[in-house]
Image 1 (cartoon, rainbow, N blue to C red):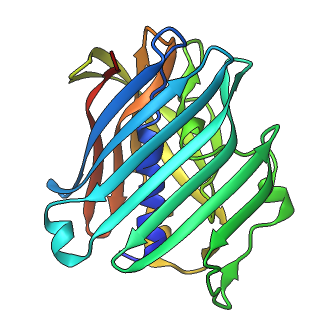
Image 2: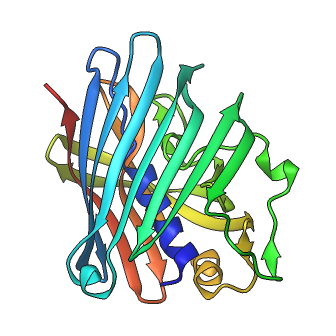
Length: 259
């Protein structure tokens, strides 16, 4: 899988893991399993903290596992800080450290009132001629890929378009309702809201990339959201991402408050 495709999947994993705690809970820990065509390829653990002053921090580690380690070791550390405002998690800073084999790259994004005021990549990548640049308009009214997928309890989750910027690629995730499904894991048992997802790349990618074209043409991507009664929010507990190599699934195997 190409570098940009792996990074998009890392961002999707990070988004799935952002299940917040209420102020009374202070900390919320999540553990996830990632598979490709049923085979384990990654594991992840995240910790969310929300303070009494309504500031929050989400930090996590993602590591390749199973057969994926036989090909190339991939790891990532990601974090986002921000404030809870108007019943939404609004990012101030987002970062992603991504390492594939011996190569590493750092993505850092700063926000103000939902707009991106700076975005850097270290080391700076070499862009091909058919690269679609991110425009100033693409940087306005956007969400980070982690807390951007957490919604308050009264939100119509599947009736919205999410403008996401992951540090390099600007994309829209167009959600549509597909009903409810039973979901059970350590820490949750109940109904999950199922959203179909249409992936729309806007900018920040190489035109003609097979992995991005494949995903943008697929109608099989889904995100399942479960409601955390303690925090009164909806957050993802299951994701299906179609690829040319098989279906990637990201499943919550545990989430709960840290005592």
